[in-house]
Length: 424
Length: 113
Image (cartoon, rainbow over all chains, first blue to last red; front, top):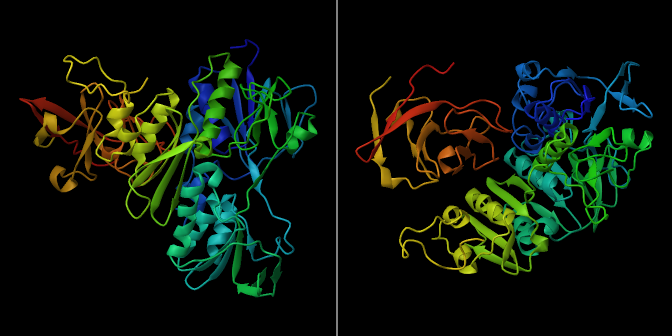
C-alpha cells in the first residue's frame, strides 16, 4: 500500500461504494474510511423493479449490509449527506452543510439518474421514473388492479416493471420504437423472443415513440400513432444519465461518464470512480462503454481497492447480469453481439433453455432462461478461452458442469472421452 | 442432536452436485442441501439462500463454495459463511458423514436464533 494513504472517502452508498469499502477492508486497509450517501441508508437497487416494487415495506428489505457491518468494518457512514464539491488540488470533499472531510483518496461511486427523454410532459405528476427507493415507493402506490399503466422503453427496467405491474393486476401498454430491445446484449433472436413474452401474456406492445404526455388532472393522455390514449400512470424506462457533476466541476476528464483507467483512476491520481458513472479507457486508448450492471460495479470496486492498496488487480471475468420477468429467470454472460454463431441447448419456449455465442472455436457468451448452471459453466469456459465442441454444448444430456471443469488426468485411457471439447 | 438420517449411497451425488433433503424428512425449519465439492468431500447446509428464495442444492459447487443459482451469492461449504453480496447472512450448516458407502446427515436441530 502507498504508505501515505490513511484517509479514504467513498462518495455514494450503492453497490459500487459499499463494495469498495468492503474490498478496502478485506484487502488490509486499516486507515480512516468514510462512506457518504445522500439517502437514508445504503440499499440494493435490483429489487426495486421486482420484489420490492411488488411488496410492501421499506429499507430493511433491501439493505445492502446490516447496521452492525459498518461498525464492524470501522466505516464512518454519513447518510442524508450530500457532497457539494471536491477540493481542487487534493482529494478532500466539501459537504453541502459546509463541512470538509480531508482525504488522501476519494472514490466516486455516485451512480446515475433516470434519464427523461425529451417528450413534452415527461416531467408530469403522473409520470414516474425508477432509480431510487423513493421512486419505487411512489410508483407502487400508483399500481394496482385495473390501473392503466404506460411503460415507455422495453429495456431491462421497462420489461421488469411491466412484469411486476401485471402481477399487481395493472393493464400495461409497453411502448418502444425498437422491435428487439436488448439486442446488443442478448443478440437479435433472443431479444425478439424476450420481447414477444409481453404480447404473449396479453400486454399491449407498441413499436413506436411517444409524441407527448399530457396530464389531465386525473389521468395522462399519451400521444401515440392514431391519436391519444388515456392512462392512469406512466413509467419511463429510458436509461440513465451518469452522475458526473462532482468530477466535472473538479475539472476531471468527463465524456459520457467519468473517464477512468484500467485501475479505476480518473484524470486526477487521487480520485477514482466506480460503478455506473465510470467509463473506462481501454488499453488501446479508445473509450469503452459504461457497464451499468450490478456485478460490474463490484468488479470496479475490487479494482479500485487493489489500485489504492497497491495490490495485484483481480482476474478479468466476462460481464454478467440477470433479469427476472413473468417468473422466468434470465442470465446473460459475455456479449451475444460479439458472437459469430449461436448454438441452442433446448428450444426457446416455456421450458428451460440456453444459447451459447461462439466466435470461431471459442465460446464468448451465453444466455440462459431458468438454467443458471449453463451460464455458470459458460462463464468458466469463456474466462479461460476454452475451445468447445458445439455438439456437446447443444446436447441437453451433457452435464455442463463436467464440460466446464478441466479434465482430470484419466487413470484409464477409456475413462474420459477424448473429444476436442474438453477445454483448453 | 437428532438421530442420523441415511440420505443416499455415495455414488448418487456426483462431485460438484447437490441433493435437497426435504424438511419433512430432516425435521428442520428449512430443507437441507447435501453438497459434494469437486474434490469429493460432502457438506450439508440449509437449502434456501439467505438472500432470496432459491435452492442451494441446485447451485454451482466448486472449490469449497456453493454459488446460489439465482443471484450468485456464494457460501463457504465448511462454515456456511456468506462470502459475497447479495447474501449478507451466514447459512446454517449441518453434520454429514460417510459410513460404509452411505451418506448420513446429522441435522442441527437447535432453534433458529
